Length: 409
Image 1 (spheres, rainbow, N blue to C red):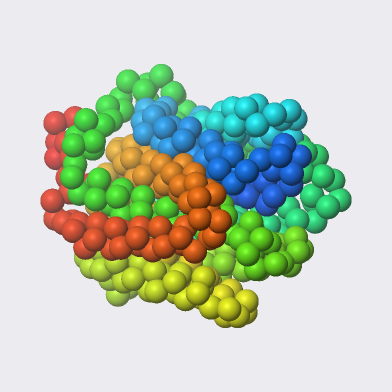
Image 2: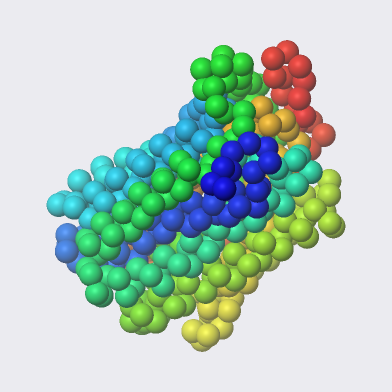
C-alpha cells in the first residue's frame, strides 16, 4: 500500500509533493526579508549591507542553476532533489547561529548552493511523471507555489520572530527539511531512475547546443528582467512597508503576504489561459503582462493611499506572473525530456542572477537617495527590458541536437 514507485504512481500526488517542496524552499528563503529588519539592528547594518545579505543567497543560487540542471539530466531528479533539501535545511539552521555579517553572508551563500538544484530537478520530476501535453499546466501549477511561499513567509515569520526571536525561527524551519527529505525518499521514485550508473552513461546532455541557442537566451533575458522586479519587490517590501509606509511588523506581515496569495492563485489559472488562448503567441502574453506590471508598479509607489498602494502592488505582481508562466511553460512545449533540466537551469539562472543584482542595486540606490522611489524606477526600467526581450523571441528557431538528432527546444 506504500508503493508509489513507477509509471503507475499517482502523478498528482507527486505534483503535490513537489509543490510542498517548493513551499518549504521559499519559506526558508523568504523569511530573511522579514528577519533582516531585526538582523540589521543586532549587527548595526546600513541598507547597503542589508542588500549584501539578501543578495548573497542569490549569487550562489544563480551559479548553481546550470550545474544543477546538468546534474539533474545526468543523475535523475530524485537524487538531486533529496540532496538539495538536505543541504539547504542544514544551512537554514546555521543561519540562526550566525555571529557576524561575514558569517551570515557566507552561510546564505552556501544555503543558495543547496537550493540551486531544486528548480531544475522539480521540473524534471514533472517530465518524469506527466505526458508531454500535460507538462505546461503541471509546470504552471508547480510554479504557483513560489508565490504562495512568498505569501506564507511574512505571515509565519512575523509572529515567530516575536515569539521565538529570529535565530530560533531559522532553526525551527530548518528542521522542517528533515520531514521533507523523508517524504521524498519514500514516495518520489521515478521508474527510470533506479539504475543511476546506467542512467549517467545513457544521458548525454546537449549542453553546448543549449548554451549557443539564441532564443533560449532571449527567454532567459525576459525572465531575468522580470526577476529583478520580482526579487526587488519581495526582498525590500517588508522594509518599505515598515519604514516608508509606517506599518508595524504584524500589519506588514499581513500586507506583504497578500501579493503572494493573489499571484499564486493567478498562476494556477495562468497556465490554463496560456494553453487555451495563447498557443504559439506566448511571447505576447508575457510582454502584455510586463506592460501592465510596470504601469501598476508606478501607481503603487506614487499614491499616498496605503489601501490603493496595496491594490496596485497586487495587480503588478499578478501580471508579472505572466512572464513567469511563459518562462517555465514554453520550454516544456518546445523541447525533449532529455534536455529539460539543463534548459530550465539556464532560464532559472537568469531569474536568480536577478535575485542577486536586484536587492544589492536597490539597497545601493536607497542608501544614496534616502528614498525608495528611485529604486522603484529601476524596477520599471527592467519591466521595459523584459517586454523587449519577450517580443524578440522566435519560437520556430529554437532547437538543439541531442546525440546527433535535432530536438525541438
